[in-house]
Image 1 (cartoon, rainbow, N blue to C red):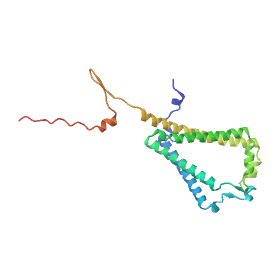
Image 2: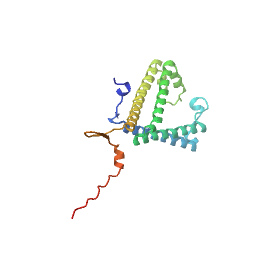
Image 3: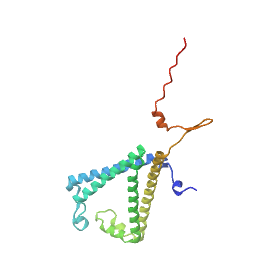
Length: 225
């Protein structure tokens, strides 16, 4: 009987590319996003007045420090950690080291769990959508039109949007998991080749060891005079 894990196992993903290739592309994409975020945060630390991370009372109605220096430092550390995790996944998929892919897979599970909690909170507390819209600045485009929409329609639209995001994230989690299984399977599988004669069966050494062993030179042959 085929187990559910084996039933969903596949070595191809996305545009019919290999799961290793898909994991490498995904890791590079996440690294680029976090690198851009890191540059923005470092620029905000260097020149906070230009990036205006202190929103005035004319925008939100209250004087709130949205991101002070401490929060920016925390966000910078998180961005550096994400770049490290994504780099490990990219290296692990490229060099076929399964253990290097695990941190990125754990991050995907954590991110999926957070988005699922957001969807559950919208279902349990549907008024949170209206509360969030009221906190948006007055210059936000189409704010009044969105707030005039029926609350149930807003909740349905938000849940549909979150559901699409969760489906896409679940597919990416499956791709990374299949890459981990593929890499770990190649690392643990040992293929034995046997040479059978009339009276004995001798196992040959692995291919890498056979290539590393230099061939024995044939004994010198002397020609008779």
